[in-house]
Image (cartoon, rainbow, N blue to C red; front, side, top):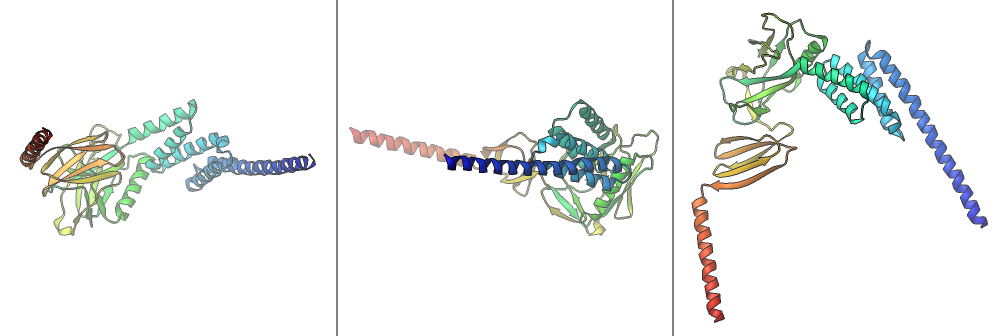
Length: 325
């Protein structure tokens, strides 16, 4: 009994020490999260970079706490602050990511209203811009190596839209000269898609945008909710462009002989390009896809083979019956 009581006492002491450590760590987490969040609120408008850093630090401390669920409210607030700041900075993909994070934490009614307002502003201000090659058929999903493109945009854009254009210009110039085709349209023409391109919302006859190719050819185009047609450009033969096949991220390509016919069962949207005796089947990587062989050029020989096999079975069966007698 004496040893049991002594062990129990030591266990209580150890438990108290552990609990004291947990409380101390939690207090340290709280002392980091709340001041960082307050600092983010104060600075994110005037100095966005510093404010965003404070918000990210607050999220990191909250997520790495012993009890991160205690800081759910702080995390939602930080994600919303970041989303709003990223939107003004033109970082629309990052804005959407922050809103998704808030939604995953279960926002309250006020936060839902803020999220809906910001998503609505994104839908009104931005749309995907498609760019195609006018005088050349692109046979497969690929990219043009060596292309140089730039945008000239109107002054009457919102701050978020202007910042978005500047980001696109930087990425266009610095993305290793890649002009990536991501899908095919209804006419089977491959196109590049620029995500979250600013929509012109002011009225007037001004065309608005210009796409500058190789610094010398200018393509003027309007881009609004009512007219967001693809921009068509010519292949610059003297620019040294090279077409290089590459499957975009999020897509899987399956190559099949074109003498076979397959039924493609998928919960995504398949795209099939036939050329050189091969079917190039593009399907979303996240989709569940089933290919079922239906017909082929060798179908007659396959039927003959089936008939011969059936006759062989009949003959073999008859011989077995005769042997049994």
